[in-house]
Length: 204
Image (tube, rainbow, N blue to C red; front, side, top):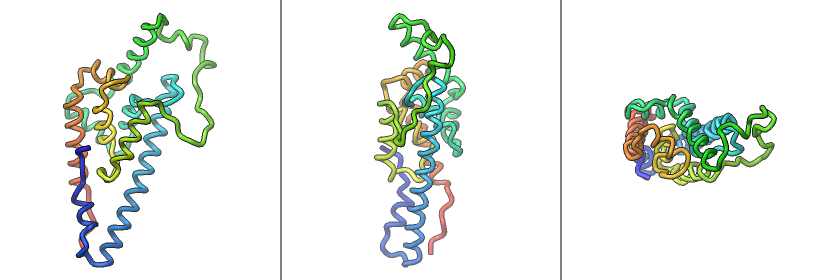
């Protein structure tokens, strides 16, 4: 993964700082981790809501794509604005992928929910968070690279999904005319700028 905030990491790891500054660095790392945990929690919750809206039992990468725009940092929207893509076009593009999949097996779009809300998928009462294979891939990549983003942003989520070339999210983005390489590089740029411009505590 290419996006990195080396300034923060190198400063905190430099052995020449005084003990109070080292304690400040440790506090910042703990605070950043807690912030990322809250962000992941919010990301997952919103992804699950988007999945339920689509009558899916488990959120996929496409739902994490939508959820990235729900994060308060606003960087997902910045990425789409910069490449000239419309965030409002994502949901219709995703729904079109579902409709095409149903047609491919001889079912009319919406037919499996034609009898009303009783057949819609409801949230499972489980202690562990479940995601589809593509959704798990998003979370695994974000977790594997958590040292490289501080804090976790919507742009990081976009970066990961842009690197996925198969699945509903990838097909929906292609249907929108989005170049995945441009999307990925723009997400990386926005995330790096955000990290560079983020306020840092004064050195002690």
